[in-house]
Length: 130
Image 1 (cartoon, rainbow, N blue to C red):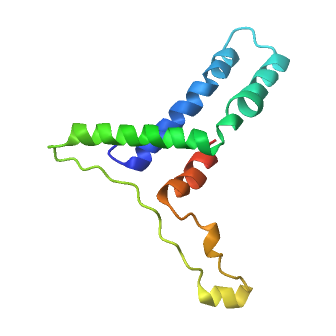
Image 2: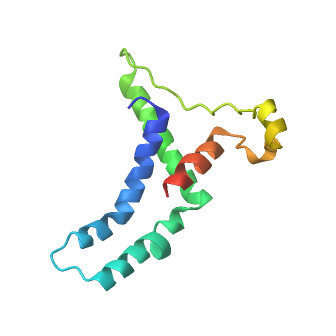
Image 3: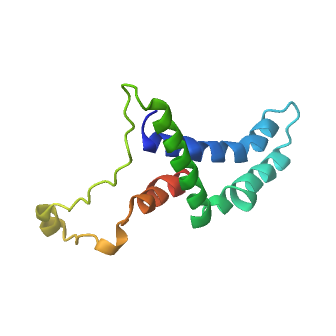
């Protein structure tokens, strides 16, 4: 729980689950119509909520919420034996030269890899979850 990636995941899940809660309640009802269930699911996923969250502005909001939660957790655990693990950007892995020569692969261009930690989590965590 003292990990920024965990905190970010919790914030993302909170947003996803709060937007899909109405669909969940409807599908658990006693009288569920297949046609209206399908339309409600389509509205939740594609038209109304979840696809609209796949923007840079909504990620910025999520990132700010995670940063605020990170600071709150750091304040709570201050003076205890716990330490907060900050997020790190993964290393850029170079493809094996031997495999490149055998298969004929070319290395990834450097402009396609995320340059900042925030951009990495936007692409690899937030958009993937949504």
